[in-house]
Image 1 (cartoon, one colour):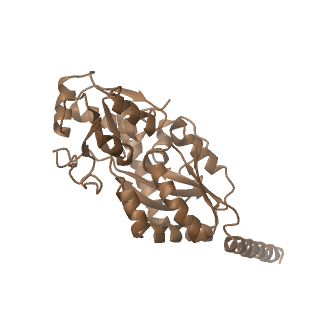
Image 2 (tube, helix red, strand yellow):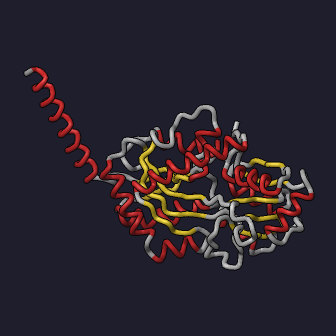
Image 3 (tube, rainbow, N blue to C red):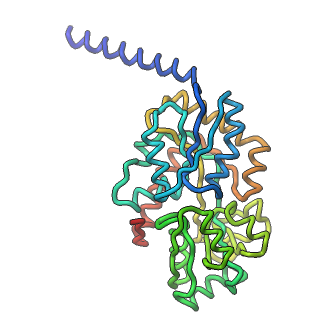
Length: 325
């Protein structure tokens, strides 16, 4: 009898909590929503936030604010959002190079890519653009590999921080060319690209939006994009596969995560509204024109992609012995 009473009380408590969560979700959003970007302005993560902010605000009837919190290879932003109130009003612009790789690059993190967050949606998939300063003699990706192999230690490559996807991509290029290059770490994509245009950096492997504008000035050249699919904004730029290097594939995804414990109803509403926006011509034109590809994945698909990439980055980082510390 005693256990029956306890069980009934527990069931009542669960029902009450469920009703409270449902009521809470129905009033969402009750204040402005903040999209926390883990990098400085420029690049795909920042582009996604700014392309999403206005239409999402209109759909939800609230102001959507973009807040850049760069530093520590995305850990500052991730930690901030992980500790935020799980009510859907604070979202992280999630980037595969941080969310899937950082757990294996840092000895201790105060966030976990799965336990600390609730997935919302992936919206963009972006190949990496392989760009060089004008002073670099290579005119194709194949020539860059040949030049790097013949001149070990002569080239350097810029990264958005030790252990960043830029760093991992550069290390992969070293392995591909069987050579040595020097990694130069910066705080974010913007400063890296600025120094590439100034000739202080030889090579940068990053998402296309960060390098397309300067490539149009002639200060830098984009030799290829990674993966096996050309970028809409760079129709004449070949893929690494077309250049004879099909294994040089380091595409990145970008999406949104909320703090763990966010009510499922809120997460689903956010995902649904984002899908409507992502399938619209205005959003597609804005992001694909800058060098990314729209590739929507909802909550369940995002969960699967995240787990897959965590396993992949663990293998790559361990084999290359890369550390951000």
